[in-house]
Length: 368
Image 1: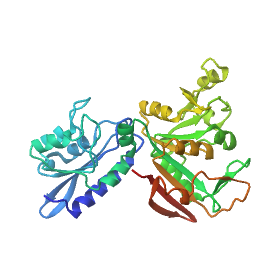
Image 2: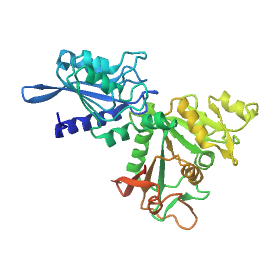
Image 3: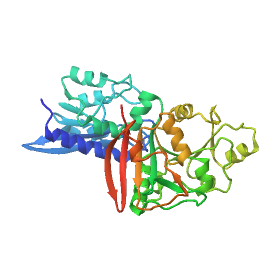
Image 4: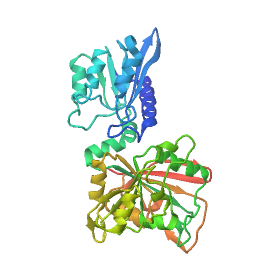
């Protein structure tokens, strides 16, 4: 059976649904499942599922439970290949077979070697029709954190920058400078709510004293882990980050010895200390990203200043750049942006643009 426009519409709906639990499913990806049964000539969604908070139960299990007997002979739209291995729960492919699903339309293949291709094979061996890679690019974008951690053993890293009209990201010694408007600010908080971690350098903390939390009404409990690059432990004990460390996790990445008094003070204030390797007087970012992935972190937003942004770009660690451009002109005393639209062509492609009030957002994704 060929893939139809209706299949693509249902997969698009499933992918949109999967965004609801981004950043909240632990080490498991946020996967969605829609089960569609045809009553007469009218297709009806009879079951839907989404990876639960913390990662269990899986989307397929919930959709099957909601559909009940109506799952028999139906089509299941799944944003990621159903798992084929026994873990704390039976394979989702097996559950789809037992429920009598006749056809599975999948967004993309799971790179986990315990699953990759095996979920599809299990379904086909049981007589289930399988359609692979339907809206694959959209599915992979929604699953970017999980896929990057599985393939590259590090989190998916997004760099977020706000540029003035004259390509500055701030003014030296002036603290936070408003470059973009309220709508762009809200989009930043939405991105935080969907991410596992947000990272800045100590320079940004000392300059701006940010809290790095999600403060949109209704999403306050979805603040990500905050990460600060602080090689020599200059983080003030009275900073907004340290004062909130008990309520919102804060990781301090450092090369300072644990016997140092500042290390013990931060630990006592509720900070999670991460011992890092040093490279040329800086924290070794690739090794640190490996360590974060080992802790289950799949997505990181880098909101640091020019130096931190440049370090991530030079290390080849940036997968996506969100470049906001506001109408403000800062002038010659401004801090030059490490990237501008004109400089992005070498390693990135323009994936999309959006307008938020007077601000323009350009989204770039790494080429290849």
